[in-house]
Structure formats: structure tokens, C-alpha cells
Image (tube, rainbow, N blue to C red):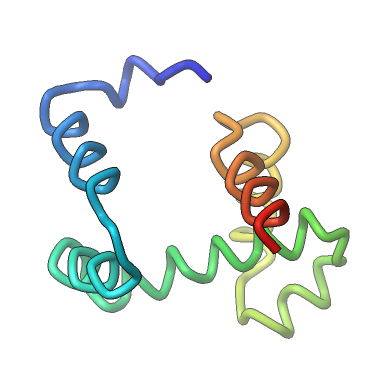
Length: 99
């Protein structure tokens, strides 16, 4: 997996190291709450759920009704799944193996 050079800098490296240092669900919640607004967290959680549903083969209308996501958000996530950095796909596969 290649790192997007437009993202890579000392601040992002530090943030990624902080994320990798998390050990528990509670630690993740605490860091995310300190880093992001509640609205930002809800938006990220919604995009993650959209990605999971798209990967499972769900249709736009089902995803819209289950998540409240707009068709624009669903389309953006679908593009990321197909043409993005494979972050969604990697973690979806990894979590599926753990189940």
C-alpha cells in the first residue's frame, strides 16, 4: 500500500502513530472525541457504515434509508472503494476474517 504524498507530513505521521498506539476501544473513543467534533465523528461513522453496506452489495436506496446518507455521500464512498487507497477494503476484509 502506497502513502499519498499529498497527505504525508510530520503532523500526519504523528497522528498515524497515535492511532497505531491505541490498545482498547475506550482509548479509541477518548482520542476520537478529543480530536473531532461530534458532528465529524457522526459523519465518519456514517461513511464507514456506507462502505460496509456497499461492500456487502446493498443498493443505494437501502443504504440511504438505513444510514441517512445522501446519494452524494454514498457515491463518494463508492468511488473511494473502487478507486481509492484501499483503506476501506483492507479493513473490511480484515474485520470479516476476525468474525
